[in-house]
Amino acid sequence: MAAKNKSQNDGKRRHFDENAVAHVCHYFFEGRGPKEIADMMTTMHDTPMSQQEPYRLIQKAIKHYRWLHLSSPINTELSEKIRQTFNLHYAGVTLTSFVDDVASRTAFLILDLLREMRRDPMNQREVHIGFSGGHTARKVFQKLANLLAEPSDSLPETIVCHALVAGIDTEAPGTDPTSFFSFLADQNLSDNRRFVLLNAPPIVRSAEWASFRGLPPIAKAIREAEKLDVIVTSAANFRDSHSQLKKNFLEYSPETITGLEQDGCIGDILWQPISAEGLLDMSKYEYRPVTILRLEDLPHLAARGKRIVLALGPCAALEHSQTEASKATVLEALLNHSLSGKTSITHLVVDSRTAQELMRNRRTEPKTAAAAVGSDSSSSRP
Image 1 (tube, one colour):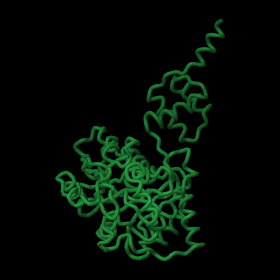
Image 2 (cartoon, rainbow, N blue to C red):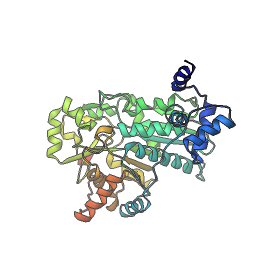
Image 3 (cartoon, rainbow, N blue to C red):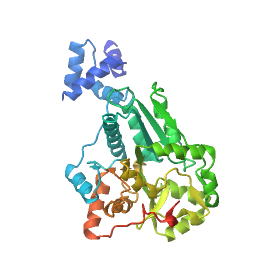
Image 4 (cartoon, helix red, strand yellow):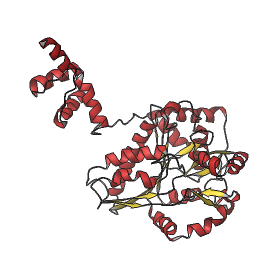
């Protein structure tokens, strides 16, 4: 009976406090195996545990305490090749093809940019960062919020987060920046974090766009966007079944989908559709998405020293991450403008599969640099 009770007790999960979790993580990073960690905790810290427990406590450190973060290693050679080919300030190609790794690496990149701006001789104490929407941008912001959880002298004193788009997917909660800013707002750092929100409908009639931009809350968001130092966005493939732009118009304006397809739409960035040749003019359609920045303004912002960060990974839905349409053609269309001297992107983080396809396409099917995105043509203004 005693042996049976002991077996039942051994099968129960014991509670370990955060002190024990921290010690297990320390020994794990020293390269010790689970049995050795369990023995050390039992003999040195008077905390008996089985050799299976260290795995569970490491998982707890990751999921519950959020102490451990994976920053995917970078493919240095491919990253540098892309940076040089497309005249980027920075390019980072993750060794994996997981959107979480792209998001994590992007969050660390933004952290480095914030520290860089804090060290600026002009002593920039307030930095403004604008975010697009979508699943990838949400993951980036969530990981960044974890990195900013503690105050630091190496960071700007005040960080102002701007919502650059409205939530275009009415069925996917938390994919518009105004909502996922709560990750950072919930932290006890309210004096050092401010927000410029965008409480607006996802689409408006194109004929009413000018008057809509003049509404006081929208006009204020547009004025505040002039202070932006960093712009963080992702992009989507129009063929992807999870494209939020396509999903919205399929429900509310199917004729817009037909028109975009006829005009050669391959994807979108900041909810604004693009073709292989450049930005598509939404004024010809009955409805258009609500956005703060215009794509043709990005080259001007880059020329003024603003950092424009593109985080591009596979579909954020895990079960479709390797099967949905690749974003390589969308990425190539965006990056080609750097070759024409009209930089729309300054910093890029991309997964390995997309990056490899991007460079493979350039070898097998050379394309001329598209010049329409970022052009000054009034016909392309959204």
